[in-house]
Image (cartoon, rainbow, N blue to C red; front, side, top):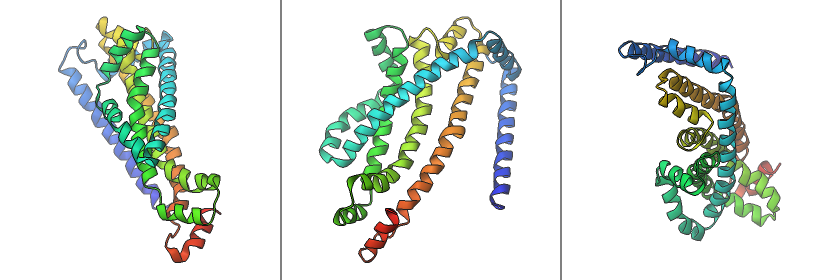
Amino acid sequence: MRASTPRRTRDAALVLVGGAVLLGAWQWWAAAHPAVLVPSPYETGRALGRLVDEGLLLTEIGRTLGRTVLSSVFALLIGVAWGLVSGWSRLADGLGRPLRAVLLGVPPIIPVIMGMVWWGSGAGVPVFVATLVSVPIVAVGIAEAVRSLDSDLMEMATAFRIGMLQRLRHLVLPALSAPLLASVALVGTTSLRTTVMAELLAAHDGVGARIAEARTNLATDEVFAWAAVTVAVALLVEHLLVGPLRSRARRWQSVRTDAPTNDGLAPKALERTFR
């Protein structure tokens, strides 16, 4: 604890110094250009204050976050199922690999355009696009985690007639917890960025739509303000929600990884894992 406190203080100081350098570079960049091209941090802060006074900030952030959460849930449900099947079955993995490659390689703008062709402008397009972009990310991570399961421990569990629910709880879930929560973090930030981009092109409300409106009106300070808000929300989600969950997953996974698996200690390994 004593050793970690100075390290955390040093890391916090480095973050503050890095943030100050970034703000200084932004101010220097803004001073060399007209405000309509590069607004200063002060002008961006004033624009942010106007958004708060007008009641737009929380309303539009709520809409964008709602679509982000919805698309993330869809992506996790589909991606986890796909990853489990691909990890357990070579046949399913081979059949699904071309589709996975297409989804990973297609630029997000293509699904946006196709969604507008199929459904027109509206809230459904951002959810569709963010889900489509995030699904293969989850599937790949879960499939790799399934393939990395300790085969010796699984065979021992079968030999000692450990029930399926017990194996799922003490072997499979601890192995999948860390990659699953890593996928949650990646999907959350990816969905947020993709949702904002899709809203900019295909929605009538949300952060992306407000950025498009500000761009049309040449209100560059509002564009910067919305960008700053999006980054702040992504960082808050990462540090307040995903970080603690990832730490919890590491502690849970340690129950599995520190169990010996050689044949001579098989009963002890199972006893430690399933206690």
